[in-house]
Amino acid sequence: MHPANDIATFVRVVDRGTFAAVADEVGLTASGVSRTISRLEDRLGVKLLHRSTRRLVLTQEGETYLERARNILNEIDAAEAEVTAGRGRPRGLIRVNTGTAFAKHRFIRLLPDFQAQYPDVEIELSVTDRRIDPAADQIDVTIRVGMLADSALIAYPLGEVRRVIAASPAYLARCGTPQLSYDLKHHNCLLLSGFARQANWPMFGEGRRMLVPVKGSVSCDSADLLLDLAIAGAGIVRLGDFLGEAALADGRLVPLLSAFHDEDASPITALVLPGRQNIPRIRVLIDFLKSRMLVRA
Image (cartoon, rainbow, N blue to C red; front, side, top):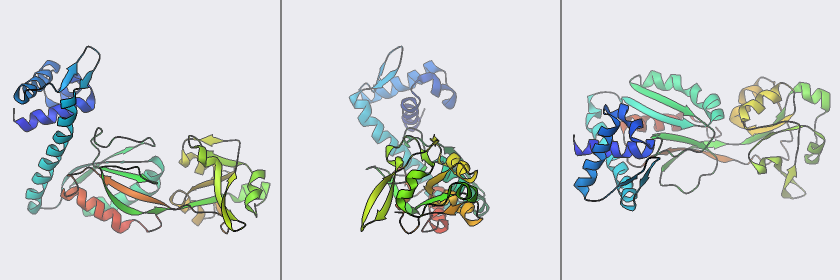
């Protein structure tokens, strides 16, 4: 087996956690995968993994080697893509991860145009609202809404999301329309659970920015479901403008307190693993998203 294949097998074993999980991927038995790692360790003269009946644990040398191994594999992939790019249009698989609301209300609406322009590029989309490890999950492009923690990933700004407060005409007819920030305390506000700060909505008043505490009968960990509840007349919601865009445009939702509300703009960012940013298929996806995303996405 080529040394690069040994390296790739090592990285997949670390990512998947067991020899058996990798066996089918590489066409070997679990013992065959174990021998591949042993061969790599013999060549290097160090132990990369501590083996036990329960799990595999990286040694200190293994942790150092893993980072370099990922970079090597990324560089090989990038080099092969670059030297073959002249033979035709970008092609191959891109693994993309993003949150549920952004996927439904923005990303998948752009996909048909992207596929029409680049029919040889395949998209494998994973959707989750939990934070993932792009390297461990082998995600090529991760799209995030909100401020980012420090990261070794390469960041490409795609635009920004602003928040809007809104309710359905039916709710406002039944419960009245809030005119001032503090009127919200008399209304049923739909809250995104799991984020304590979501129970305080930022507003401007008396010459300063303040946080207005709100409460309601329903909280949910899905902003998309809160949108549906608001449209159904369950209460007042504060959400990203790309979620409520269609409902606001056709009157199913009515914007509220625009003169007082802090829209709290946050970036939308595409994150790419180092070494993969120059792969043609990934580059064209990033360029496409940058060209199609509105400044106020």
